[in-house]
Structure formats: C-alpha cells, structure tokens
Length: 284
Length: 269
Image (cartoon, rainbow over all chains, first blue to last red; front, top):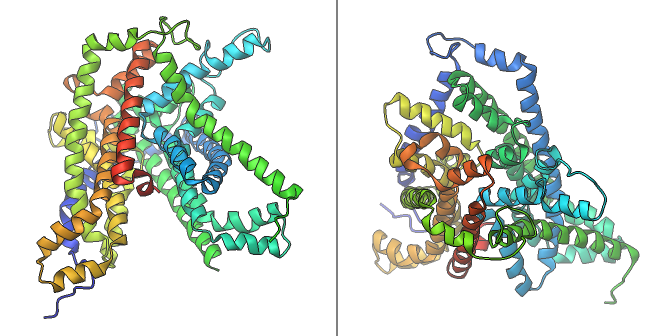
C-alpha cells in the first residue's frame, strides 16, 4: 500500500481524547442544563416549560435581555470607532513603533479583567479622576454618578475588549495590496473616497470578525458588568448569578442560561453570515 | 510620482489619527492609573495619590488570604495548562490538515467555549458535578478551566501546523525517518512556538477566570480573581491596587519574554 507522504497524515483519531473530554465535561453538562431548565419547581419534580414562559412573559426579564443586547451593541460600535483608526495607524507605523503599539494593544488583553475593571472604579468613582477634574474646573458642584451608569459601563467594556477588535482589523488591513490605493488615487479618487470604497470594504471580513468577538465578549463580561454597572443595572450574566446564589432557583437560572446561550449563538450565526457576505465582496 | 497633498487626505489622516490616539490613551490610561494608585501613601483610592510609598506592597507580605488565593489560582492554572496542551496539541495535529467534515465540526466544537457565556457553562458544570456526586475541588476546577482554555492552545497550534511546509515531512520520510522521529525532530521544533504561545494564553486565561470558578470552588479553593472581585464589591481595599500592580508587572514581563521566544503577537492575530 502506498503511504501518503504529501501530508502530515496524522489521523483524526488524535482528536478523540479531546472529543471524549468535551463530550463528558462540556456537552453532557449543557444537556443537563437544558434538563434542569425544563422543571417547573425548585425541587425539580415536575416537568414543563414554565420557566421559559415565566421569562418570556415577564417584562423585567425581557428588559434585562434587551438591555444586555443594547449595551453589547453600543460597546461594539465604540470599539469599532476607536479600534479601526488604531489598526490603520499600526499598519502605517515603522516597525519599531509597531513593536511598542502591539505591546500596548496586547497588555490589556492579558491583564486580569478584575484589574482593568478596577481601574475604571478609580477613574469613574465619586472621588475619581473625572469627577475631581470637573469639580476643580468648577464645571460641577457635586460629583456626577458615573460609576453605576450606562455610559460608564459602555466605556469600560469598550476598553476591556478593544484589543479583540483591533487585532483582526490589523490582520485584514495588512492583507490589502497597497497598489490598490495608489490605483484609486491615480484614477482621481479623493482620499475619503478611496478609504470608504477601497479600504473599508476590503477589511470588512476583519471588521466583522472583530465585531463578533467584542459583541459576544461584552454580552458575557460578568465582572465588568457587575463592578461598573452595579446592582441597579442588571444584565444577563448577573441575572443568572443572582438566581443561583441569592434565589437558589436552579431551574429558572438554567432557563435564563439556555435563553442566553441561544441568543449568543444567534448573534454568532448572524455575524458569520455577514462574514460570508463580506468575503463575497472581497473576492467579487 | 508627485504626491498630491489635498484637503481630503489631510482631513482623513487627521480624523483617523486623532481617533487612534484617543484609542491609545484609552488603552494605556487605566493601567497607568492602577499602577500610580498602588504606590499611594494614603488609605483611599483617591487619584492623584497624596504621596507615594510602598506600604501596600509591603502589606501584601502578610495578606495570607490573598497569598493562599494566588497559590490556588497558580496551581489550577498550571494543571489546566498541562491538560490543555496535552489534549489540545493532539487534537490540533488530528484536525489541522484534515478535510473531513468531522474535522470541521470538531474544530467548531472545540472553539465554542471561547464565544459562549462562561457563566452559563459554569452553572452547567456545577449541575453536572453535583448530579454525578463529585465534590467541588481542584480537580473540578481544572476540568472546567480546561474546557474554556483549550481553544487557545488549539488555535495557535493549528495556525502553525497549517503553515508547515509538507515538503519537509516528505523529505524526512524519504530519508527513512519514522513518523515519531519526524514528529520529534521536524514537526515539534517548528510548531513549538505556536504551542508555547497557546500554553501562555491558556495559563493567563485560567489564572484570570472567574465565571467558571465562581460555581466550582469552595471555601478551601478560594481563587485570586474572585477574592479580588469580592473585596472590590464590598470594600474598596487599596491592597487590591497593590495586587493589581504585581499582576500587571508580571504580565508585562511574561509577555515580553513570550514575544521574544514565541512571537506572541503574530500568533494572536
């Protein structure tokens, strides 16, 4: 028999241990989560869809879901607005500067989320930097409530997840043939036109990949959400935790988790579809 | 060719440049603030600090609860990294060049914990372990963490495997090397930096994990990030600033080392 030597030729069997591990410790737990969510009572004796009915007919629960999705969208938009220009600057920088920039971009990604969030408490708190600066300037008399506000949360979430937006866009920008911009300019297009009609469409796949990551991560950023959003601003992860830790209501917590998982999966699917369309734009 | 400097170019560069600088400031400022505050001589997180001292760092020397939590986190992260590399590299070797549909599906499965809400998985794992009657312990923590950390090892290892030139393997085989020998002497050295970068990311991610740990810990397995999170929620302890300072410096040093030996930044794009 002829041996295949043109490929690494490692068997897919090598993936079996991890597949087994995932089957037992990932898929089974998720199935059990669904199983628990299908109980009507805390003692888990009765089967039924009551928990889901309860969530979907409760204005408070629905507003938690809506608020979570909205804050995710706002965070993603802010990340894109600031992240794209940074990626653009990175591509135009000489290599020594690139080294510095990449450190600045990566450091937050690898620093503990608690640390990064903690910084925002110092900045946005009652006696924080923003408030002291505004009071020193005489613009306000009493400290503004920034810490437990939506605006503060969006800024903090954006900072925590910016690297996830910048990295894929850098990758996409570096694949663009620089001659295209020259060609566009030679044909008489202005800088803005070239940017909007050439650069942005060609980086669309990277932009969508970045949006997918920042959106999903800010939806599920439990720590930043609870520390900056506080108790008043309930979002989905905090809602799940509250139902488990405080209310001890496993079936309802499981149902919220299932709804949240489905929502995130739906978001991923939408982004992936957009990504495929964007690739069509790049190649067509 | 003569370069045309017109209003459009200037305004575009200015707009993007200003936004990019704003973005840089946003990335740097919070870390800088934490570092400065950690050297405060006062008792509050006021910024700017009234004076500078090392008192809060010295205070860490007898903060035994924080030390214990840090030790636990280190232990769990080390085992998690070991298990993630063992399972992840094997799976990456199997999947990387396979064109089978099953390989694609497995790849999506193994990557999914990266995107899915960690808290929902944490709750699932708690339900699972309590239903099969396992007490929460270091073992359950390591298992939970491995699920969410394995994608990092897989991603960086697959990326290096895909770039591997098949000709090298062909030559090795035609020179009579066995598969195992080829793996040890040709493949492993070439994908080593990818594995290392993945292991580093897995370690950092496990060390920093809260959503999964939250449900899988007990009193004896207190984890550092959770301890910090709870301290921050209840009292704004300045010691947390000192812990943060230690973490930022350690991360920075490790990152620079990893950049040098494993080309970390290239592996993360």
